[in-house]
Length: 175
Ligand code: ADP
Ligand code: MN
Image 1 (cartoon, rainbow, N blue to C red):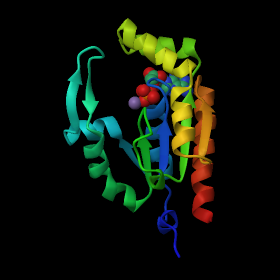
Image 2 (cartoon, helix red, strand yellow; image 1 turned 45 degrees about the horizontal axis):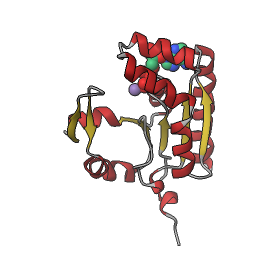
Image 3 (cartoon, rainbow, N blue to C red; image 1 turned 45 degrees about the vertical axis):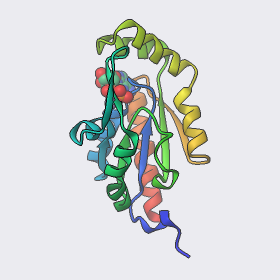
Image 4 (cartoon, rainbow, N blue to C red; image 1 turned 30 degrees about the horizontal axis):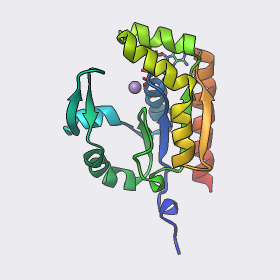
């Protein structure tokens, strides 16, 4: 019997973490470095109109998760995708071969989100989300055994993380 994940000849990688931890920056560089395809789920949702409503309090659209999954299914089946999103519990477990959760210290994250112009309530909640490791725990629950935590505070961290993730991808292909 051939397991579903072994049918892929390139791995599917999930890069997740609180907004501002550096997912998009790393995904972009990883895609260049590895040749895998980067999927920014927020951008895909916008392009394919996968929103069900607008949250006035947080000033952001609310994702229609089922529609996003429908849009992604065939793409993920191809393998070789790097998925970039600040949540992970609604994707099917079978989609991913590995999950990297990026982390940032709260002072670092605070500055990044303030620069991005987040209003104070949204800013505070994202800092709390990072302090309480919400996404890390969500990842461990949703993808037991394949979750790696990476600290991503400085440009040096980013270089190290790029090397580590690229190496993981190369090692996977050899198996
Ligand atoms: P996310 O996609 O997780 O919301 P971004 O990739 O957009 O995060 O990064 C948020 C901000 O932090 C950007 O201005 C980016 O240049 C900066 N940044 C990301 N990673 C690092 C890092 N390792 N060191 C310093 N700055 C970083
Ligand atoms: Mn992003």
